[in-house]
Image 1 (tube, helix red, strand yellow):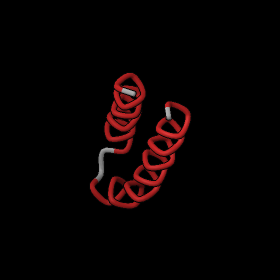
Image 2 (spheres, rainbow, N blue to C red; image 1 turned 90 degrees about the vertical axis):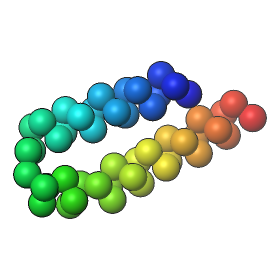
Image 3 (cartoon, helix red, strand yellow; image 1 turned 180 degrees about the horizontal axis):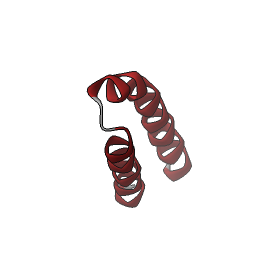
Length: 48
């Protein structure tokens, strides 16, 4: 679980560096949150 979250953080950090602008971050944030939420549910379901 921690590995998955670290991986997501790394990907998110790269996106922030690549985009740079606040507008792009705000536009991409809901998509990232949805992906993180899906990953959370999937991992939780698999580990039950």
